[in-house]
Image (tube, rainbow, N blue to C red):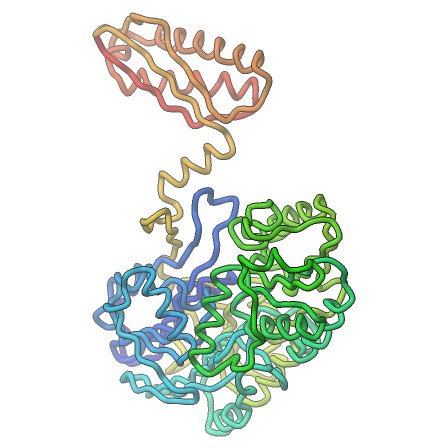
Length: 552
């Protein structure tokens, strides 16, 4: 479908069928509207990469019809891809003040601060991007200024919730605007596109105010240095840790650039006005250890974050030692179990005590549990439910919950599903190609790029390089050369395999016909297969093999 006609369409390109890198498109009367443009973080299966993001190829081809990018809030999985992908789209960007401040810092780092047109929308404000009329609705989440967006179209209203929860005491920012949500429900909502992250969690997510009280108890009763790690964007939590430190007669210390940037952005917008005075990281090592509370990034085991550097002794100003305590005021994001486990093992080797949310009530989620989802459906009463922001199992369960809440139609639409919301029956009417891009150094490349595939092969199987020097007829003029990297084993075993590989190279050339021996590509392929057979038989590995054929 080149352009939307007289219908209302929804198309997720990221964040539906996965948690992270959200990109949602709405189409109506020839125009497209984008909500959010985020990233997810690479893991050990993508060596050498930092972040992944949705491939926006579908909308890049239609960028002249894209009326703008609207950001619901400042989390990386909702705005982190703007600096990378905006040059492909070149359209206006809209955000509330805190998200705009966070984005401004990212754009400055990317050298785009004077190029990207960012319009700041006030909390509870409205925006006209014909044929779409937008109203921002204040929600609560684990970051300041999360917004739902009510999208008015000629076919009805769609409520796009963004990330949210119902927190009666969020500590920073206002509470969820229940009155606005009920008003929308009374006026009539065609569809609600809604967060599915915690659909399997019974009850309610809990309040940040409860966590603040628990942190005071945990920090007060520890000897030695205390370090607390949490998400830098969870500024209510950061403030709670700092105030708990002061209550325990400790000096709070911010460790990690992301924390400083987030606190600065918050204070620019009138938040954290009574944030406790902090000690500079470079001065913390001069204080008695029982008077220090470090507030660190790195709760997900990120190898370059502040806590990982402390655990490995790479922080030149202060370190961890036996008798200290590290508090993980966060949850484990699915997929990060191994990296967090490695980090906690490092801490255990140092003799550091580890406190997690399994030991004390020091974390609450920023996403709605089942009772909150039910309450929102009771307020809004949409005719159609479209779960997003979850893996496939989350979306299926969310659809069942919505129907239990008397929503007539629930549609499970993973990335690439083109959903017609109106007129007529709401359904998936087509599928469009989707994919992922990776930031590889300074370049954006598809995740299935041949070079990245080869890198993964080398990670698991090693690499081999063979050189054959032949005359024009294909006769060997020197002994084949073979080197290998990344194969484990003692020197004798590897040397034996190399010798067998050289013999196999000789045999591969000898077995070729006269015409085959004169063709470089045929010689190289025969040699490559021979090398891989040798290492498969000895190591059960097929190294990525390159063969250089030299003719004299």
